[in-house]
Image (cartoon, rainbow, N blue to C red; front, side, top):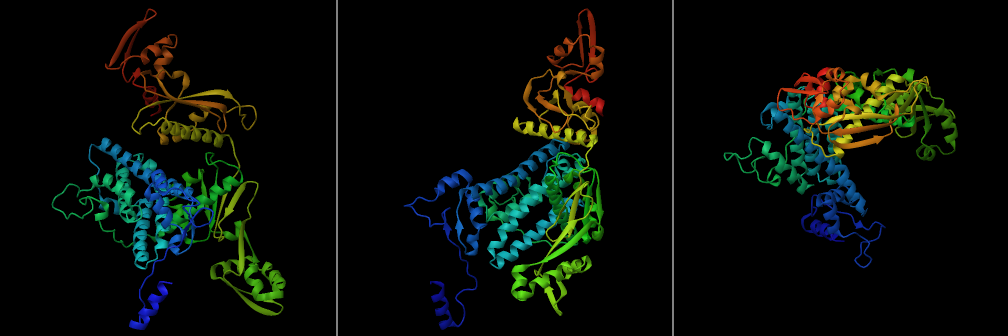
Amino acid sequence: GWFYPLMVISTALFDKPAFHNLIVNGLVLAADGKKMSKRLKNYPDPMLVVNSHGADALRLYLINSPVVKGESLKFVESGVRGVLRDVLLPWFNAYRFFAQQAVRWETQSGKAFLRNTQRAQSSGNVMDVWITASLASLVKYVHEEMAAYRLYTVVPRLVGFLGDLTNWYVRLNRSRLKGNDGEDSALTSLAVLFEVLLTMTMIMSPFTPFFAEYLYQRLRSRLPTFGTSSVPSDLIGKADSIHYVMLPTAVENHGDDKFVAGMRLLQQTVELGRRAREAVNISMKIPVKEVLIVCATESIAALNGDLKDYLLEELNTWGVSLTADVEKWCSISAIPNLPVLAKRLGNRIRAATRAIKSLDSLSLRAYTETNRIAITVEGESIQLVADDLLVKSTFSGNSNDYAAMTSADGTLTVAICTVQDEILRKQAIVRDLCNRINKLRKKAKLNITDKIDVFYTDIASGYQGVDQTTSISTADALGQNQTLLDKANIIPIPGKACHGQKIITDTHATLFGSSQLKIALALPAPSLAPATQQRCREHSVLEILIASCNLTKNRLHGSLASSCFDLVADVHVFSSATAARRKIVH
C-alpha cells in the first residue's frame, strides 16, 4: 500500500509519477514454502551458510532467482552450494590454470608476463575472436540492462558467459595455452585469457564483491600500471581495490558476429552429438568414424573452416561431413498445437488435423522460415501462424549405421556413425589411458612442472577382439596411436621397467583390451636406454643398481659379474625412464 499513496499524492500535487523506476523484491520463503519463522526454525542459520559456501555464493544465488522479479523464492541451501560448484569454482579454476601457464611461459621464455591488450585484440585465432566478441557484447548488454533497471536479466547472462569461458574457451585451448602450438601462440592465448579474466573481475565486482577482489589482487601485479606512481589512483592496476575502478566500457564489434554465430552452432552440434552417443551407449572416450551434420543455415560454413579441428576433437571423430541437403537426410512432419488451435477451430479441429498431416515437406519447411501457412478446412482457407503447429524434423538416413539427434527447431541434425572396428577400440584404449593418468596426477596433487615416469601393466586379458580370437593388448594400442600420446605429452612405459619410488597407483577395468590395467606414477630414476637394456639383458640387476645412482657425472664406470661396463649419460643411461624412451620416440 505504500507505493499507491505515493503515486496518488505525486499525481495530485505535481501531475507526474513519484518515481521513474521501481525495484521490488519478492519474498524469500523457507524450503517448504512457508514464511521463515524463528519459532519454527524452518531455515538454515545464515551465518552457517555464509561460512560454508561464502557470502558471494549466497548473494549470487539470491540475485539470480525469481526474487529480483518480485516473485517468491523457496530458499534451499543446496542452491547456494550449486552456485559455488557451478559458477565460482570453475571461474577460480580458469584463473588458476591461467596462473600456472603464465608461470610456465615465464620459465620457458625468461621474461615476465604482463598485460598486452594490443596483442589480445589483434589475434586472428577463431576462439580468441569469439571470446573477445562475446565479452564485448556482454559488457554492452550489462550497461544497457542496468541502465534500464532490468536487473533480473543481467546475472543469468553473466553466469552464462562464465560457463562459455570455462567449459569452452579454456577447455578447448588447454593444449594451446600449454605451449603445444608454439610459445608465440601460447603468449597470445594467455593475453586474451588475461583480458577476459580482468574484465570479468570488473564487471562482476558489484555481484561477487569478495571473490572479484580476491582475483583482482592476484591479477593486478601483471598490469604495467601496478606500482606506478605517475598514474591516477583509481586506474586499473594502480587502484588498491577493484571497487575503486570504474566498470569497463563496451567496445564495438567489427564483423565478429559471424564468429559468435559459428561458435554457437558448434556448441549446439557438440551437444546434439553427445546426446546421440548417449542414445546408443557409445562413450565419449570411444572415437567414431564419421559425424554427419545436416544444416541449411549459413553458419554451417564456419564448421568447415577454423572450427573444424575443434569439432573433430569435441565429437571425438575421425571425420565430419557437412551438408545442407535437408530434403535428402531429414523428413519433416507437423501436428496441430491443440491448446492453441482447438480454441480457434472448435469442432473443426479434426478436419484441420487431417489437412495439417497432409502438408508436404516443402510447405512445412517454408512454414518454419516464415511462420505462416494456409490450409483448407471444410472449404474455408485458414491461415496458421507461429505456435499453431508443432513441427518435428527426423533423421531419415540408415538407422543401422547412424544414431541421430535433431535440435528443437529442426534446423540442425547431427548423426554419428555407430559402426565400430578394432582400430577405433585401440584408439579408445589410449584415450582412456591418458585420461586416467591425468586424473592420477591430480589425485596425487602434482604440479604441472613436476616430472614423473608413467608405467602400465596388463593384469589379465579379458576382452576378445572383433574376430573373438585376438585380445587387444595395451602395448599394441599404444604402438598404433603415437600421435595421441605426443599430443598428451605422455610416454607410458611397461611396468617391469619401474625401479623408482612409486607415488600413486591405480588398477581399473578398461573399455577394451585387458580386463584390468594397472597404472603407476613414479619419481624419475636413472634408467638404461632400451638398446643398452637389450645388450645387458643377462645382467638384469644392473638396472636396479643404475636406478640407485646419482647421475652427477657424464659417465658411469664399473663391473658386474666379471663384466665391465662404461655408460655415457644421455647415450646409454638417462635421468629417467621417460627421458630414455623420449629419445627413441622423437
